[in-house]
Amino acid sequence: MKKNYMLLITLSILTLLVAGCSDNTSSDDNRTSLVYYSTATTEDEKASMKNVVAKFEAENPDIEIKENYPAGEYESMLRVKMAANDMPDLFDTHGWAKERYGEYVEDLSDMGWVENLDPALEPVLKDDDGKVYAYPLNQAKDGLAYNENLLNEYGIEPPETFDAFMKALETVKEKSGGEVTPLWFPGSKKSSLAQFFDQFATPLLITDADHDYEEALLDGTLDWSNYTYLPKKMKEMQDKGLLNIDILTAQQYEMNDLIAQNKIAFIVGGSGQLGPMIEELNPDIQIGIQPMPAIHKGDKQIWIGGERHTVAMWKDSQHKEEAKKFIEFLTQPEIAKEVAEGTRLPAGLTNVKANNYYQDYFEKYADIKVEPYFDRVYLPSGMWDVMGTTSQELLSDQLTPEEVSKTMAEEYIRLRNQ
Image (cartoon, rainbow, N blue to C red; front, side, top):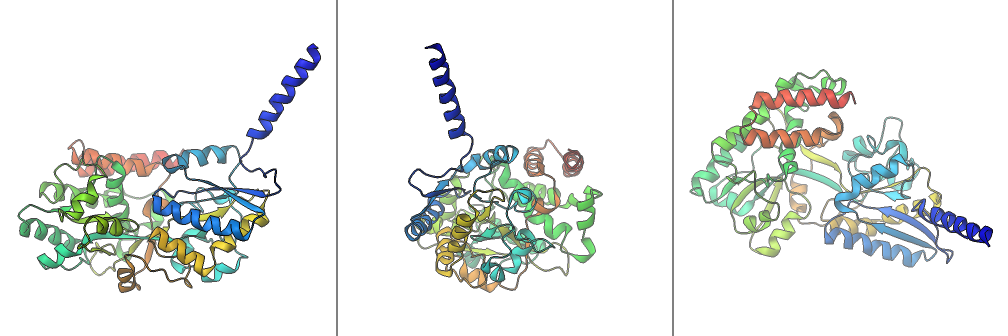
């Protein structure tokens, strides 16, 4: 009796271990189950993916896609899975296809869609040996978003240089009598401040031939005094009243209502959901988007961007054939168009033309080069948090611009050496 009891316990434990050891299991009904993790967060983004998953499953009744949308827990969950070498069959690389997930992804270079990969995405999705790390569902093109109604009213052209940007902010303050915030941040969320530094770091330190510090950034020898321009300018904006007074306590949820009420002129970033969401609140408003202003004289404007949502395949998946079948389905022009429009971003393929809120602006600036996000290429993991924290400390007078650069230098070296 005791032997039978112990055997029952052992079998129960083994059953639990087998059931819980991996997400990547097949259903009992002979359907192959593929586990898919996505960084999609908004209801529109998730609805778009759920719709195409349903279409795929209807055409492929022998394959089931188990969707997961962990939102803010995505990175921590994927780090645990990487450590255990137990990745989902399909997952989103969210800007880190090569640097973070490179050793875990299958090479997709033999797939037909690769010939239509937008060249702007090649630096972040393809390496020198030709390996393709993920399929881009859409792509980011970030710059400055602005209230076009206000700019037209005040006679302001979208600024092509940083000097023109400063003048535009001052004009907004003057002509609105202080009723409109020239440049608004939800600064209680330090990542919004980090976005300013990340997007402007590229025109400051990379794109101008006479101020190109790419090699120094990559080999760890950068003189960070070259970064001080940015904290000086942000502090100047604050001192001149060009930023929202409540910048360190302002919340993200406040932004849409304020823009809809014509209380904000510019924000940093702005692609994706912003325009349509504001238009729902105020049908008469028009939100524009433009590339980043050049900082150095003679330099050109750029977009900041790269991959936004992707689908990569785990190299050790037990269901590679089925996983590739799903990716192939996503690359069909009509499906790729549906996803791009559902997420309100440009498609990642050159043979797919999606209609979205900013389409006229993207076409207007079609010849502008897209540069990858600065931190993804040039900074060690952890520096995004440093950029945000030093920004808050700058604006609360805990650090001077020079001390911001000093802290950045120290943390850059420390994190590189980890």
